[in-house]
Image 1 (cartoon, rainbow, N blue to C red):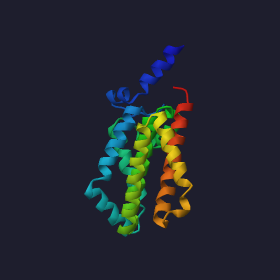
Image 2 (cartoon, helix red, strand yellow):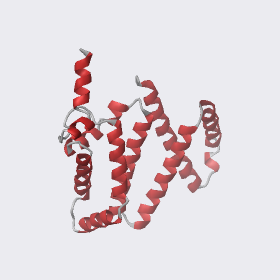
Image 3 (cartoon, helix red, strand yellow):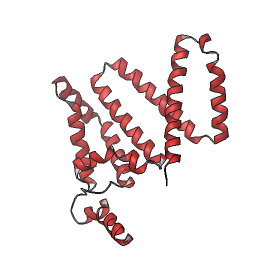
Image 4 (cartoon, rainbow, N blue to C red):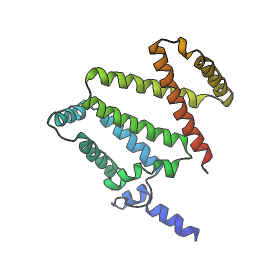
Length: 200
């Protein structure tokens, strides 16, 4: 009976439905298609004309999240996936591909980039720049942790523990940065533990 499952997966793959001029409406969007979707969405988010249009709509009191989702549906359909179905698959990435740390991280990065776009539209420039700077630090620290060996990570955490003992000696700014980094570290390690605990 395995050939039935294999055939179904082939028939619901983006490549198959696209080749037949149809849009995928079932199964799960492939990791390759999601990677292309994330890449095209990020390019769109960095397009000045698109950002300016969203700012104009926000100034008119319109819900810019609807405009963003409409643009994302168009991207999915160019990739051979029915737009609303593609959007619904985004919430399933962690369940379907949770054992693939790279896929999970790409999804997390995408969600953070989308949130940053909304912040750029809705927040005052100074507040937006502050959040953008924090997000960049978060990404850099997460990337650094992913590149560490187990021994390096253990040493890093020991050093953090030693700093924790002197938390009361830090300035308010140093303390805020240390606590922010601790939150990022905990989140990154939870993602890694979750990926490692899932069957491949």
